[in-house]
Image (cartoon, rainbow over all chains, first blue to last red; front, side, top):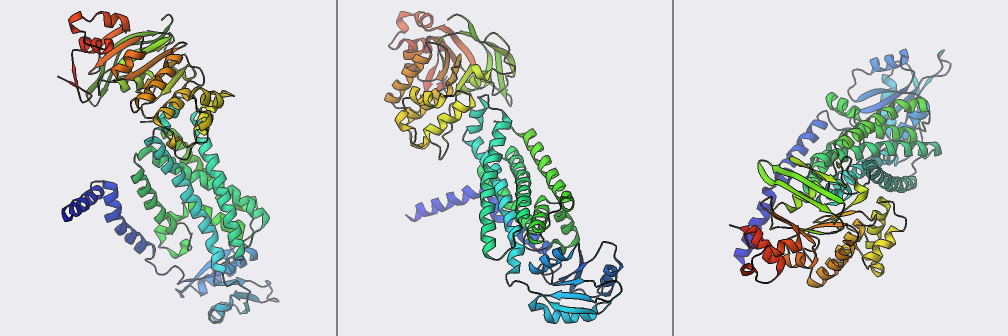
Length: 343
Length: 247
């Protein structure tokens, strides 16, 4: 019995170690994980720096004055909000610790500094450091506001995983079990096959999104009706992008084990670099720059804009949608070009 | 056999310097049942992959229905692969519906199930069909569009005798109206079914022609039992050990 136990143990070990991908995943991936995590949080805890949102046009001198006055305070980051609705949405979702709403230019109405109930002390200190006096206002901020912040991130994460696995894993499986080769013997056009994969997965993901929206509603997340329509557009574009990436992976990876490992390995840095759990401004500059170009980041930003800030203006959403659309076009065109029914 | 359905001329295939097929030539005129016989590694599947338009030949060419296969005439050809996919969580009825839809045959699903004699098994998962049932379903689905040429790669390799008999009956029926080309290393099956035989060993054609002619060419002292078996060993002059050609 002991000998059988030893032989079985050895066989199991060799089974893992003889597969480069499995051995790499077991032995190297944790090191990569640590390195990525260390790089991501090199500048400290993501919420160590509190964000002050200033509601102002881009070139407003007041914005520059506030930034200059607070430049020496490492614990505060000054960002601009396009309007009060966006700023309050970000305050409610705990993406900002304070909002500065400038008063009238003639100072007949003073500036207002809005903070949540748990930031009174921070607000007082901040008000004292501002270049002009501001009335401190304690705003009604939901206790679970961070859940609102997380919800679009979780939604994007679901779409990302669904897209990558739905095509990446399924295509490798179809290739391994001979289904693609079988279809290659029929007159089925490639576009019909790919279109069916997209349609089926889109239906599932939209159902998944509807469930997530309903669940987030239970946590008090706001849902502007027009925002939900925009969300459907964002989800479909994002899904196309990640399905395209999945197809591309399936074109170059031949085994089911390896494709699962690669997708898992890709998902982790994407989660950290996509504003799913915390803003990119918390990351070191180069990583934040990389994250800014990711389709998942654009998806999260667009989803937050339409759901949390009530943004519905096509002109405001257009640049983000265009970037997402470009990602979808590039990944899909690339994967279709590389797609082969069989080896 | 009358009209030319398939003509191979000097087909060759190399994989990384290894010769899988060498100068394979033959012409099939339909209808009828052509058996491509040979031991494991003879090049049977490689030959079918080329003729099915799934893999290019390294040398030589072939014609289908008297013309070059470009574009490949998928609507006139049916294919049953050596390893047909048994999709998980897919029923026999759904599989039939898929191939009926691909070929645009409105009542195709019902025709497939009827031809495979599986009307009562439509809701059974593919993975739960017996080997014989699955083979009949795959064949029926491959001919739902009534192709003029049907390729089958060892369709009965994993079947029990009962399954082989049922699939044999189906193939015999199909071969009445079309050319059927099947690979097998089961000489008994070939003896029972085939009207024409192609003996392939080491990627080369050892003999090709009507069954009767190949059988008749065997000298009386070399006849030991099954006619096709005698013809195969006479024309190929090989021994088979564990399914492989032995020196």
